[in-house]
Image (cartoon, rainbow, N blue to C red; front, side):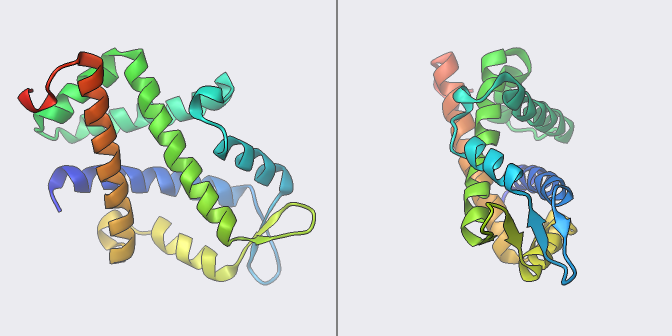
Length: 184
């Protein structure tokens, strides 16, 4: 795996880790170690996951914008020495629409994850969800490890997502400048 892809995958893993920690902090732990996700959160997150970024409230968009800015700052610190990414970062740093596009990517990535989680979690009669002990252990293993120490399947998942992000960012950079990104 090339260094650029690996570093983007690390950042995606950090975003995922941040989400899992927040999600778990919203849950109640029962006597056997399972987490109960309150129905209010389930309903809100389901609604947000099924809403496109452009249809979110400004407050909800601000959350994605905050992550987008954090992502840009982290990428800027990594000094990739990649002309295409440097061009894209220049756009992200100086172009509000470019940052909105990145926030859109962050929202879509989060929505895909939420939809996956809600498919595997045990539903409760009153609308809450149970995160079973085995799922908690799995998520904690991924959250508590650095990217390099993750099991291969998880590395592949974050790398796949990094490839998709880069492809979308390259396409966006090409579209906004209407230039051949390969010539940059």
